[in-house]
Length: 463
Picture 1 (cartoon, rainbow, N blue to C red):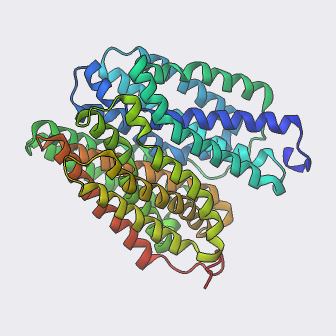
Picture 2: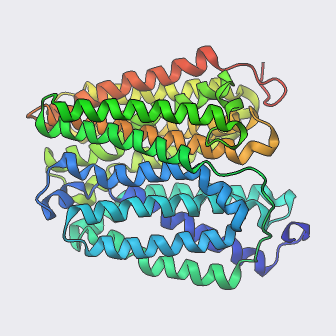
Picture 3: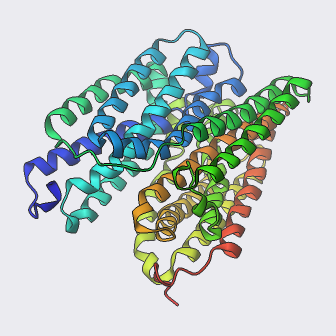
């Protein structure tokens, strides 16, 4: 419908502005909490291990739902699901901002993760169907710009609210912004056509995977708090494995309708990319959470300054995301992925070997290296995953990559929280976590290096 119009009108620009604001809303909220965790722990008189769930609750629901959300958007209409997701996001933000009990906040964050998945999966389709095919690059560029801007500004705004108002204003700010997006989306974005999707939705797969991940992270939480292996923790870990096995059997039986279709599970190159993303996510999530925490708890930075301390990484990542696209045709996906993963491992390792009295300036090279590497890695890995599958499954492949990214980040934070709780010194605990993350990310470099096949028919290699 809209794609047949070759010239852009005010209608198109209004539609793009709706999507731009929605990306700012979802991506900015996620990174805004990184400098606020200490303040949240103080508000609820909770330990930092429990407060990790502010990030993990969001990441888990987002990661597990993102694939299913894409299919729901195709079945029920992208604009309809988009508006519904933004409404859930607004209500959850408001209730979470008012929460006086930690579990209420965590429940709201889980709902926000679900809403974020609905919103983002709809945005991807809406952005590219809004414009004529020859203008698709404009849609992609604007979405990347919004993602980079919101990711960079999130920690700064989160630190500002935490320092001068309250961390609760991170959530309260979402409400008017969300209703503005709903209003503009309802009034200014065209109604899309509902497609006739034959494939079903693997709700049982979603449930078994969710329970497996939840039980694992809950076991990590109990291990961190009790600092000892007990019967309950072992039971949770066994339950997690059983749910994971159930999930794998479910995927094999469902075949094309599975959460992760069986043909993708049999594609070694695709699996190497997906699991690389899962492992590399450990570095980004850990730095996002632990650098502000370290600066606040040990270096006595304000929440605002701790958020601003992440800017070297965020800005470098945004710049090199565009550079990655330019280099892609010459270097090829495999080497961009490998260079990016190796650079992130090296950057995190740099941070892990800093001595206890290191100044912030000594953190900057490691942060910049991680940011540059993340910018190179991110676009290349998504492009490679999409090129490895049939064009009809490109959206599904992209969604699976996002799923692995958020699940990997959540799992890494759960393990890191246990490491942090096992050490009396916060600095030592964070440096140990960074050391583990560096090795995990290095494995994320090795997987595509050895198992990623050539993509001669899909992606120029620049040989």
